[in-house]
View 1 (cartoon, rainbow, N blue to C red):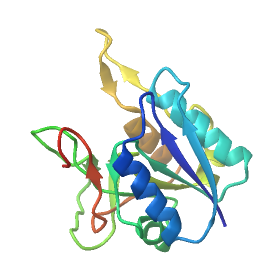
View 2 (cartoon, rainbow, N blue to C red; view 1 turned 180 degrees about the horizontal axis):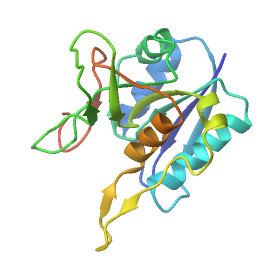
View 3 (cartoon, helix red, strand yellow; view 1 turned 180 degrees about the vertical axis):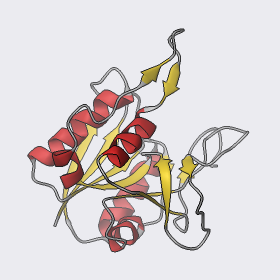
View 4 (cartoon, helix red, strand yellow; view 1 turned 135 degrees about the vertical axis):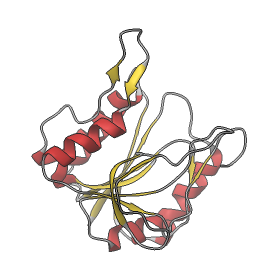
Length: 184
């Protein structure tokens, strides 16, 4: 099975993230296709490029990892084991006042995967068939009149996927960390 690993970045990949990715591929034996997109003006451009390349190269899945994330070596295997179209690890923002990067629905669990409204793309596994069924543009921003972001690309993607009948799943058992001034 061919899995694309996509990192969208306009800066550099944190060394701990690179080490996390190396440990992930050493742990899981799959056919990998790496895509590091650095040319877009914003993250959504890079994510759209990565998704298009994953589809073009006949990948079964796309695993998005942000350039500032740390996750266990078995993350990919655990996400694949759920056999969901869209499933991600839950992580917090990288600020002093933290909040989970997830839109909760009614159900929530600390020990089992659960459906959510949206989840961050920092640690997200998507079956490439999703991109084949949902028309582009997959990732985009919604802007306020003053130019600030009203809704981020990951939320818009999840909401669009739900419009096309896909469920969004979260696995709260995977320890995903977000690198900021410290690891959150």
